[in-house]
Image 1 (cartoon, rainbow, N blue to C red):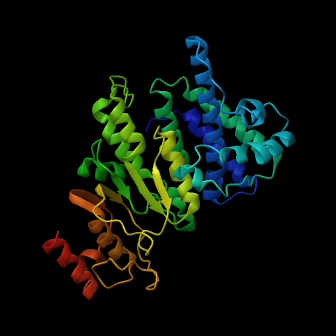
Image 2: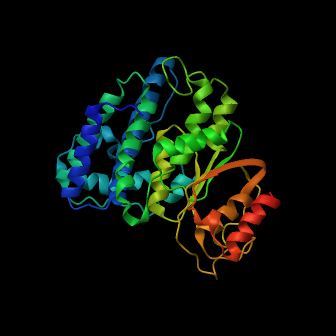
Image 3: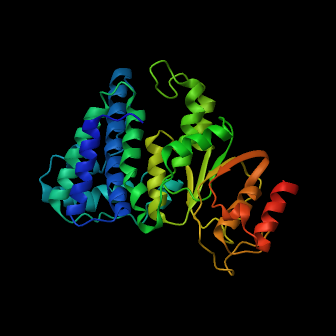
Length: 352
């Protein structure tokens, strides 16, 4: 990840403003910043389509038609109090109508602006505007730089582990992805996706053969069918936390994946029954936890409520014939002496 120091400095400044503004929980802060980034991105793409239509002579109806004040370019010009009211009452409700029927749209239904200080919102909008202006001049390509910016934003979670969320170090994710070598046309799944770091890594890896001489990912991928597969039928993930769902959705969309399939679901529960559905699984599932025996899925091959064992058993179940996985596990999975530990290792060695 290459990110200009001035961009990092502005992101750090936004973080500090949220902290001093009373929003100290990093997940809440990221969720609010994410929604604002999305509004900015929608405005940018709308402007691009307007410009393209003016050149081609084609008719184009703005996505903000009838919701003019939801447009970033409109509300950013308001005074701080009016901006807060507009973003809360117009822009955030507008986001909930975007791409109706998609998993992304479903994840937004209880999204709300929790910023209550007008100065915090106006300073954040100004900071993000400046960041976008810098990224648009970056030689690496705007979407690549935007993805890197968002990854840096998410890095606040990595050291804190607040709310039980720990991000896997990026170099570990990259190594695991290279080992399983996912390819376009394969379905990639993360059963506890968090911020979607593994899915983004798989996407980046798949585009490496199509990277141009300037390092722009996907610049040489001209096959529309392959792009369609990447956007609509490649990346799948689950997480039980709706905030993480929104963050991971946005992470994927900021990396140009239009329709990631990320759902709010406990993958170990009775509500998840998939099997032999994916060619690649990448995961760092939660350790040292346990699931309620009454809610545990009945398709597990071992008798245990320990999540570190159940996730490994589940990964074996959801992998298609010839599928590959890379998963981080505690050493107890390999050396534990309980019947469940022994049974899992036996199944891995003899049945799969």
